[in-house]
Amino acid sequence: MVREFDFYVVPTPIGNIQDISIRAIEVLKAVDLIACEDTRTTQKLLNHYDIKTKCISYHKYNERERVNFFVSELNSGKKIALVSDAGTPMICDPGNVIIKELSEHGYSITALPGACAFTTLLSRIPRESEEFCFIGFIPRNENQIKNLINKYVDKNLVFYDSPERILKTLSIIKQNRTDAKIALGRELSKLFEEVTIDSVSNVLEHYKDGIKGEVVCMLYASDNSEQANIENKIRLLKAKKYSDKDISIILSTLYEINKNSIYQMSLDIN
Image 1 (cartoon, rainbow, N blue to C red):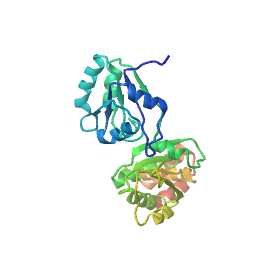
Image 2 (image 1 turned 180 degrees about the vertical axis):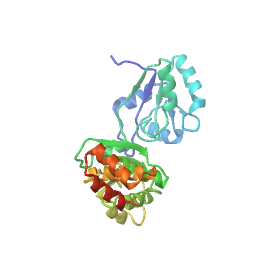
Image 3 (image 1 turned 135 degrees about the vertical axis):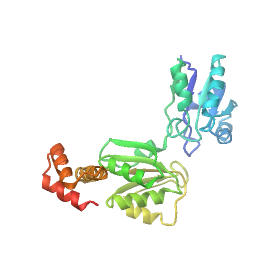
Image 4 (image 1 turned 90 degrees about the horizontal axis):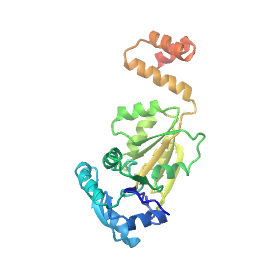
């Protein structure tokens, strides 16, 4: 016997329309309403699988105003499924407002496993460690990007970016971590799927004429992460106007590293 829930979070394919589970199709057929980002996009998927369920738009611009409507529908005994245009809802897609509301008021919620771009990339590329940090879409601001790549220098950093901005993002990474290694996946599961794993310089050269399609990246942790981590701490303390001498005392005390070595590193960092 299959348990019924009030609300279902249902992943949809990120590219290949066949990448959807049997259970997801059954749920989308069985519920009374499907909340989706773009009804036109979702309708293509529903038509392919002969799903007749009614769609209601639910996106970042109308999330709050839709909540009361969905709660009213649930109170009348209806079942609702949430989908995004592609991939798993709540992973860089709308859903937080309704999930928070329903959780706080005791509605039963379940999430189906399924397609997600960043986990698809991670399962495709070699990694020395299982540890990674996923930050969603990388910021547009150059200083914010610098802070992130320095903050996570000792961890694999996974992020989304747009094809219009990714080359600029990679250029910022190159300027701040010249030895950086990147895994870039585009159009995953689609006809022109491509995964490139190389130095950031070579990846920039590979895509010098531009890039098309949805993009997900992993910036590999630095091979010399301990030193890079200390350098990042030096930059942070310099930004707070600490002197080179004070920085050497603070960091040598915290990390048991030779004070003179840190002092020299601090002098070398502008």
